[in-house]
Image (tube, rainbow, N blue to C red; front, side, top):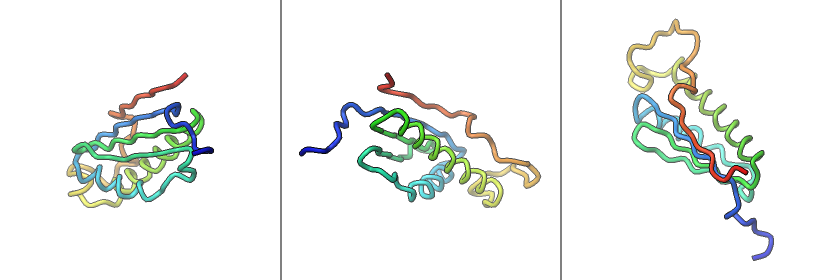
Length: 119
């Protein structure tokens, strides 16, 4: 079919974000997956769970689109994590946290990812 992009030449970004418990990963996935990509013809995103790890796979027609999608995704995840940390019940957020902590834990701790197809 003419006009369809050749997805075999798209760029791939995979990211794994570990959480303290599967319930945390599930909650973040449920909140973030509501926001669908604006241009599905140029970007695809798949969110899956592997135990307590949220796995995000992006495929984009350009590196710039992949970067923007990843940036938006991480901003959304960070907002959800901070909200959970501030307002969530202990059974979701985890015992041992205190309301006096100024900010939620950083997303950079334990973040793992890979770039495939970067030229």
